[in-house]
Image 1: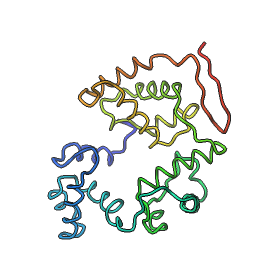
Image 2: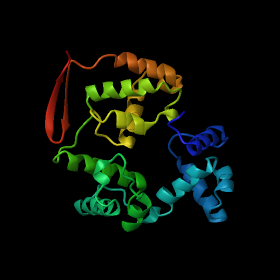
Image 3: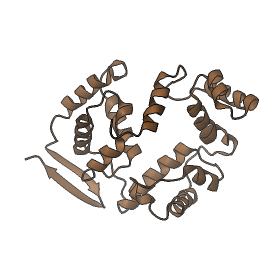
Image 4: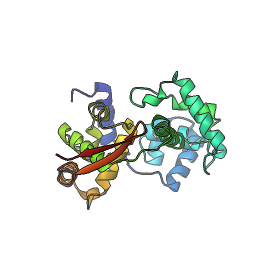
Length: 238
């Protein structure tokens, strides 16, 4: 896997082989167990992972970004002032480069500290991604089109990987720059959504799910419309 660094390969193998590796949302019982373990053990994540049943890295992330400041967090709709403040902070911490979405690293831990942890990491990421799209498209929030779905499936298919965790999303986004104005995270999220539309996907090997997607998106749509830079483009199948 030439596109993967040795460090990330080792991390992936450790995660897959760990008896505590679990996917999916955290349950209330797991959150309670994590809070209890942190109260008893501090930040000793290895023994904490044994108590909770999740790998150490996931426990640390869950605690730091979702549970540690839970009492201060807001769960309701974002106010206009909150949105403007988030955008201002993100742009300041990235020297104005955050609108690019691809190569710009956003220091979310600093962002959360600047807003006094009133929102979770996922809340801030989702809100910023939506705001970024609006700012880049003259106030219009774009949506995925059938044509973009087709290109996405074809691009992932070309990678010929055996598992979704082996997909190099940076490569997918970079090579698809002509049709894809979405971030790495948005692109991955869209592909997971497309996978969920395959009947029985949860119980099928990745290769079978991929084959079903390729069959469904075997040809570009006869006509496609998407918004880029505030303009509507029409693409016709030849």
